[in-house]
Length: 130
Image (cartoon, rainbow, N blue to C red; front, side, top):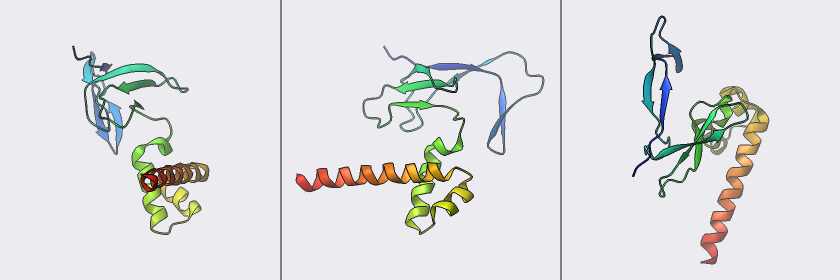
């Protein structure tokens, strides 16, 4: 049996990448929750974050992502921003420049680059020993 996670929300529209509730909207809408990585609907609730946001778990065995939050409180946690940080570093942008352009903390930029470099070094060592 396939479990699916549904979310009751108010009807919304998207303006400038922000979800805004329709003024005077009555009732609630049932919205299907999908994994942002593999777009699987095999998602279950998985507790709350520190900011009281609902955390979800993808149960697709092929998916590389285990948990996710639909709406992050801080922009620096978004996977798209982490990809932009790496792309800017490859293109020669400094830490301060990256933080200013993406409107995130310098600490977030540094920690993201550290994590990415440690992952890459672990992958290289795994491939070189085999």
